[in-house]
Length: 386
Image (cartoon, rainbow, N blue to C red; front, side):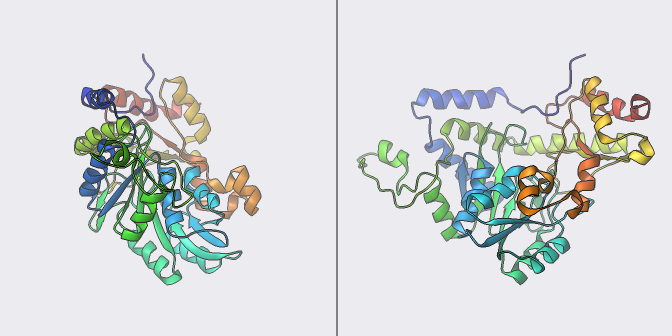
């Protein structure tokens, strides 16, 4: 049997046709497709401003830069995330401080954040980046409350969270700024890419300027607008973070299909939950009506199974089933462990989750037959790991 990959992008002939149309147009870089994608995405999540960028990393960096974060500042975040969430603070000369996670959701725990800010040394607490883990949404009401008490700016890392919608709005629109990822494994993909959303006019203006070299005019305006002058000015030392029209064209089609993709991911997550809840050696993610189901992470109970997570992952690989581990906590990564003298036990919830968790195949093209193979292998784990 063919191996089942951990992830696979859901690309149809519509996305392929959209890219072909842009290629035939003669304009490949940022232009009318990117502008249309921004408008449509902003309307979808009800954000005043949506600014397309070439990665979520770029969006996080631009957001902090627009907020004036720099040397002497402390930026707080979860250790249970990808490298990008923390490294953007270091780009700006700020220092990183971690706060532990909620054991049920894997998201940043508001009470842990409050303690971390209250006891922080070595700089001025300035910002927090809560991470919506796996498609679950952080308790943003509580996190925003902590931020207000400590005068922190807030940037949501919503890389996993599109299109999760809560009673208060979409994840990524619940704070001053939110950043989405359109990486190849995400529910909405452009291959590489991202979006920054904000209702703050000043933040949007700064991000718009800095995402393309600090140039005061769009290349599209200079080269394609009737009667436009070639002249432009560099008003700041900006970055090269723009999204091309080819990728934006894919994003526009994916956005139109976002509802159907989400419904399929939720259906698959429900099938996992129904089939695996009888397995006492696995902990399943808590379901929630707003969950985006970017990931379906499960945790091994080694004392019940009689084996550890690494053995489970290896046995599933031998059975032709792809998995991944989300995440190795940043506080045990050599750079952060060395810079801040961290040890694994500094954030015990995050480290415990890391040692026991792995993510199952979950994508809108996953067939029921392939998912049944995954489920069968999981239910057979007590035999496979012997």
